[in-house]
Length: 285
Image (cartoon, rainbow, N blue to C red):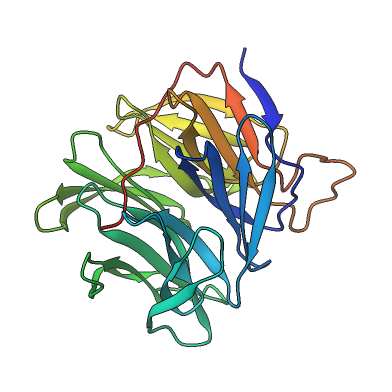
């Protein structure tokens, strides 16, 4: 039986983008509207927080042990202690913000955008190259969200939460380009909105369902294998953590939730005994 327990006492309004930092045995995550980057030691739950002057929607580790961040207006670099923040590029208008982001196998940082009012087709998926130049991988998105790469680096998986679709692309690691767009899964919005995702060691796809109260597990073909029901309505994303990457971390939201009825809403959850495991996180640069 799968066991679920909270990692930290911190309650996030919209916890997102979990990231395993093996050097400190800690999980990093962001609270987007709270303008905070949190971290917690996996074993002890000891937590710390970094207040940021703008919304940060995703962070990834860089080779120099700093954090690369997708922010309200673009990209930035932040020290692990939060004392140094330097903007790399600001390119979004004030009525937009960045959302989920991850590093690809070659060290590029991919992150997408959305309009604050969720206006259709205004979002894009951007790629921050290792030399800090930016390109656009996908245009005309509504809510750019979860992404990941197959362990053999052949495929890129990507979610546009509105309309609620998981796509698969062929991925060229050398050039960082994608092609051959394929619809893998179209989700029923009555059963939840696909949000963040992560990839298992053997190439399966785990997806968090906002307002769905669960994770869903898929084969690379799009065949659904399993559901993991959670004690929260709004899981947002997931990643693997621990020495052997067998602990599944799930970020959650407390936004518009009655926490007296749902006491774990907004907490960081650790799932054990899932029979799944992941791989080390790629680093920017």
